[in-house]
Length: 116
Image (cartoon, rainbow, N blue to C red):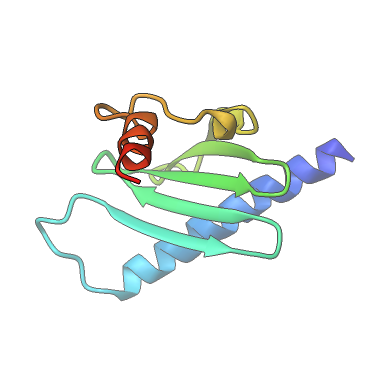
């Protein structure tokens, strides 16, 4: 079952990469634009595509039901697809604030409560 899910995930990434390539080939390319971003979704997955200046495409697949994301790198020169990372977001999304600078959200909340 898990193998089928991963196969579907990779197939979806390939579909997104191919679609992004077709859209790019049909549209005008600006010389000063280094990267393009695209998004696609199905009932179960969200795919985000970013083209880097190095000729590689990065595809991020998000499964909102399982709260998991996977990042793939696609080499346009030879078509190879490499899984770069997978992360379960469940615990990340429970953090109230992280690396957010000052003032922290709790400090702003405290100021608002003092104004009441």
